[in-house]
Image (cartoon, rainbow over all chains, first blue to last red; front, side, top):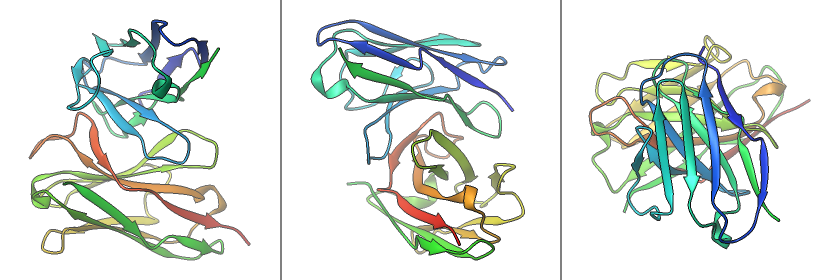
Amino acid sequence: DIQMTQSPSSVSASEGDRVTITCRASQNINNWLAWYQQKPGKAPKLLIYAASSLQSGVPSRFSGSGSGTEFTLTISSLQPDDFATYYCQQSHSFPITFGQGTRLEIK
Amino acid sequence: QVQLVESGGGLVKPGGSLRLSCAASGFTFSDYYMTWIRQAPGKGLEFVSLITHSEGNVRYADSVKGRFTMSRDNTKYSVYLQMNSLRAVDTGVYFCARGRDRHLPPRGFDYWGQGNLVTVFS
């Protein structure tokens, strides 16, 4: 199985800050990577697909980059609605696997 | 608009069975891969199974292989998860979701159901 490792596991930041979350794959997944945002009690929301493509309706302050084994999700200027947990997910190989999540908290 | 509505969760004893359903609307169901993803209480997301759009070929996580069966009925716009020999570790919220790429293996899952709680305990 491909292991997905996110860092950090949690981060505290303030409104307006720039935040970057990293996701590393245990082997090459090309650009078969997605990012999700999840709030408590809710279903995940797709933010980024194919490593760097912004899902329709997602604010442009979210961006993704990377290829191969290292990927990043960047939020350029944090808004109050962005405080949530973020997951990366690979679909290059079965089983599909997720990172363990990064909790973004208000400082 | 696209909607996925799950049903069928609940409380079951170890070794028991449950069948989850996910009813889709707002898109051409037979064009898209569908998946089940679960989340144990307070934990992260875990892939359960995925089914192709037309042939209905299924892939499973090792943790459920041989116990769970995913299927779809394109005429009813529905996908199902038959769960047998349930264990306490199967407890969690089960989400159905749609692959975002029409006719293609998904590069992400763009629409999700509300989630359905399955609790396995004695």
